[in-house]
Image (tube, rainbow, N blue to C red):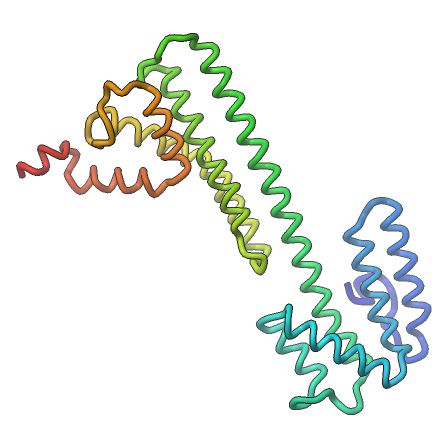
Length: 268
C-alpha cells in the first residue's frame, strides 16, 4: 500500500514522520476490528516512510539487506526492478536515495502481500473441498443406508446415484491433492480460475464415473466380470472421478472402435 493509497500524503525529507504516524494509527484501528490484511499493509507503508528519516549509513544497510532478500525470494520483473532501483552495476548506487529504497521495498511488500493472499485462497480451497467431500460421503452413506442390505442394479436409480456420488467424491479428493501440490509461486488469477475448474470437476467426475461403470458393465472394458458385483463398480466409480484421464481413455477406445466391443473390433 503506497502512501497515497493509504490516504496519507507522500512524504518529503521532513514530512515523513506525520505520515508514518497516521499509517500506524490506521494499522492499529485495523487490528482492533480484526482486519489483519489492512493492518499489515498500513504498517508496511509506515516502515517505508521511516526510510526518509534514516542517515546514509543506515539507508545503505537497509538497501543491502533488501538486495539479499530479493535475490533469494523474488524473481522476474520484480527482482529486476528492485536491482535497477538500488544498484549501479554490482554495487549500491551512490548516493542512495530514500525514495529509491522505498520504491524497491514496496515491490518486495507487494510480493509478500500476494504470497499471503495466495495462502489464504488455498486455505479456503482446502476447506471448501474438504467440506464438499464430507457432504458427499454423508449423502453416499445415507443412500446406502436407505437402500438396505440389498445389492442395487447398476442401472437402477439408487445404483446410478451411488456411482455419481462416488465419482464426485473422487474428484473432490483429487482436487484436495492438487491444491496441496500447487506451487507457492503461482499467480492469484490463475489460482482463482483453477479453483473454479476444480469445483466444476465434481460434476465431471460424477459423469465420468457413470460412463466408466456403464462401459465396464457393458463388457467393453475388460477389468473384471460383470458378476463381480457392485463393489467393484463402486471402486471403479471413485477411480473415474479421481482420475478423469481413466474415463477419457475408455471413451476414446470406444470411439476408435466405432462403438463395437473389443472382440467385434478385432474381427474388423
